[in-house]
Length: 443
Image (cartoon, rainbow, N blue to C red; front, side, top):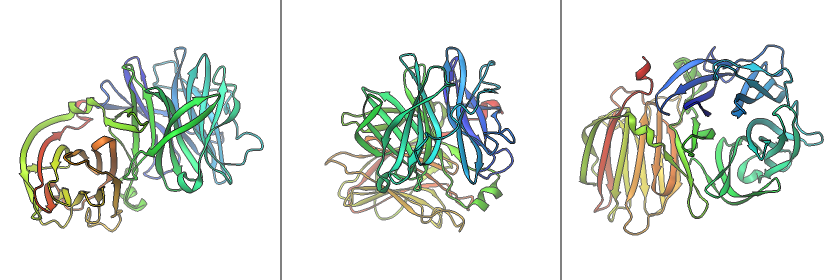
């Protein structure tokens, strides 16, 4: 991700030959406004018989004194795993790229360090020196981020780990590290294996070491993975993530595509150092037909919202639970309720959940419940902001709680929105917008 001459560029892992995670190229899309996108030609492709013959994998793009430079991981082999760090440059505003003749610029892990991974460089410049945070893991210790420095992006010196985690809590391999200053602290975001989740740490950085003071889960829906961040021309820290599939490999190949990007998010920290995510204000440009429903009483009887249905919607809901123990927003609901996904707030358990157990009639998709801790102080309403975009669901709730998910209803009429509650006194006000396509301007 980079904003170059005012335009936003997004590079992503892409196999042009099928919906399978092999032979990864670098796809490329560009936007003038962060929400409407157009595809550009493939930026990077594997070079047969070379250091990146299996994958041109994740990395970042930096501005090296006016020269856009791609820093990425090349996979020479997947079995055994052979990873190295490489660079490529562009002279035509990021449209085409030339791989550097010195590649791989970091041919392998530091001597004597037994690692479980060695990939996904995050690069920044500080006081005239380039630094790289590299996703890794140290065998017997846990996931880790390794720190390198360079005067020119070509010659690199290994320094030490920025941070090593506890494998019981944060896995044995850390992928796709993002390390950056924000609101007076430093933030480290890692995607961890084998659980395939996202954690963040916030704290202080000095003498090449990061001291965490707070940590948390980025996505309680366990869907958002391998995010990338960048600082835009407005000084904001913007983040996109990959919303992982929740259907079988066979179903993905039959559909002909796999994986989607999240909507753009703006990052900030609260006073305790917790990382907060919010949809970028630019997404409001996608709003079209609007409907507002106010002061709706909720009961155990499911109330289907009149004239509100669709698979491309933004919903803002303010729900006063009253004395109800549970309140639920039903989305992608068929008229008879055979298919539906529930967003449930359970006051007694202080939990907010996405319940996909009836989200699809297909046996090829994940049908589970994912939940986040959420306790509401007395008198505070439940505040939800929900985006439905085909199979993608992104949910923001009070105080920065975020859950992402994937839904695959089989029925064409699974488009309804409904409300319900267990207990008395719950009331809801909703604003619902139909959303336009991000590609519509370019068709």
